[in-house]
Amino acid sequence: DTAYLNGRFLPLADAQVPVLDRGFLFGDAVYEVIPVYTGRAYALADHIHRLDRSLRSIGLADPLAPDGWSDLVNDLIARNGGGDMAVYLQVTRGAPSRRDHRPASATGPATVVGFCQTRSPIAESLLEQGIAAVVRDDTRWARCDIKSTALLANVLLAGDAHANDANEAILVRDGRLTEGASSNVFVVSGGTLATPPLEAAILPGITRARVLSLAAANDIPVAQRRVETGELRAADEIWLTSSTREIFPVTRLDGEPVGHGRPGALWTRLRALLQADTHD
Ligand code: PMP
Image (tube, rainbow, N blue to C red; front, side, top):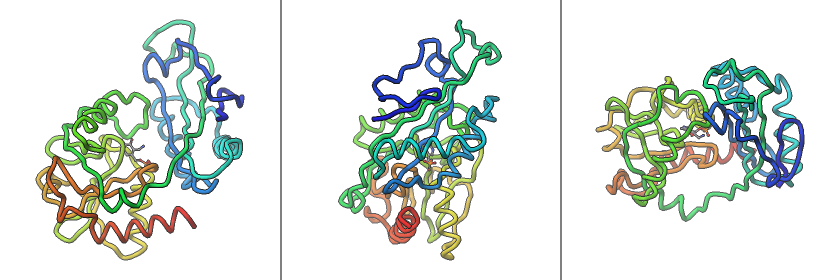
C-alpha cells in the first residue's frame, strides 16, 4: 500500500503525522473519498471541486492548486496497481509547535495525505435484499456542507445503527429528512422521486448530483424539496447514495418494511443508469 504524505510517496504503515497536527487535535481538516473503477477515478473533477470548496470554507489555501490533485490521485492509483478501489485525500491545517484553537496560530504548511483502500464490488445478493436503516435525530453541527474530518457525531450514529442491526442512520432535523450519517437519501413517494435540497445541513454528494443529472437526462422527474419525517416513514422506496455505496436500496426502516419490502422499480432504473455511467 503506497501512501502520499507532504510531497513523498511511502508505505502506508510508515505514513505518520505529529501529535500536534491540527487534524489530530481538533479535526481541523477536510477530506475526499474518490471511487475508482478499473483504474479510473470516477467524477474526479467534481471531487476536486468539492475539496476546493471545503478548503475555502475553512479558510485554508489549496496546497496543490490548481492541477496537483488529479496528478496525485492518478499517481496513487497507478502506484497501487489500479483496479477497483477508493482514493482517500485529507488536508489539515498543519502541525504548529503548540496547541492553540486559533487557526492563525498555524503558520506552517498544511498537511496533505493520500492513500488507497480496496473497494469490493457491491454483492448482488445484498442489493436484491436491500439494507436496514434506522431513523435518528441529526446530532451533527450546523455546517455539514463542509466535508470535514470532525465526524464524531457520524461515528456515533454509525455505531448506533450497527448496534441495531442496521447499515445506516437516516437523519432528521426539525421534523425533516436531512441525509444519512454517511450518505445522501432519496425517497419515492406518491409516485415521484424526491431528495432534500442542498443547504448547510447536507453534504453536496457527488453521487447525489450524478443521480439527479441521470434522472433529468432520462426524463425521470425528481424534486429537490423538503421531506417530512412522516413522508420518509411512509415512502414506497428509500435509497442511499454515496461514492462507496453507489445507489443502495433501503428495504427496512426502524424494523418496518419500506414499501413492499424489496428494492423498487425506480431504484432498478437509476441503478442501471449509474452503473452504465461508472463503467463507461
Ligand atoms: N453525506 C455524508 C454525511 C457523507 O459522509 C457522504 C459520503 N462521503 C455523502 C453524503 C455522499 O457523498 P458522495 O456521494 O460524494 O460520496
